[in-house]
Image (cartoon, rainbow, N blue to C red):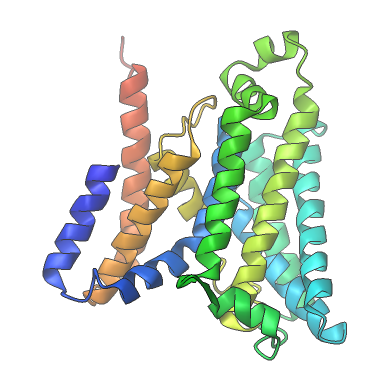
Length: 309
């Protein structure tokens, strides 16, 4: 992953003198923040043996809610952000309950959520951007401010990444999440309440997706029901898979995911700087996802479908 990132940076740096400038690196960092947040929690749920395809729609819904509540609540940014976090927890718990107690496959449950939450966001916003937050100092600070010369959005990504890394690597909660993804039967026999953990993990996804939605609002200046959030689920899953998460669960880490997020951001920015058709970015993401899964299957010794070992 490090080698691939260095190669991409060197290639586009050679093609364009401004590509490796500090200004453009900050642009890449800001551009990948929202994807990075969703990729971090996608990593957690994949380690746990699940998947969440609805993260982009959750972010879009939270974005709309934050802006609309801000506007209708007397331009109170804290009220708008609290409402977004609340809706994030709600949809996360709904996903978790459907999977655990409804016994719905995680892919199907969150695929339904992808459509449903997107639909709700469009219904409440009438399919248009809502509110205007660029007259509020807090939203402006989140979307465009800097601390020690580094954009606030990047600091938020770093803080969330560190918190989740510490949770996974140095707490009983993290060890139990790995255990559930590695062997859920053994985890259950060891006394781990798998149902509680799964619902909590999906609730965590909802919270972080809401934070991503708030940053989307702060960055664009209004609540975005679809624009800016559509396709984020593919990027998040691709980053987690590229970063080393085993899609069967039990393996993965935040460091690898962040490297993959940086790689995707560097590649996307390089293609844009070089004026290459943006549709090729989707082709590249799909190809990288397939490549990551192929590498995983080869490493695990998985046999080809229909062929003997």
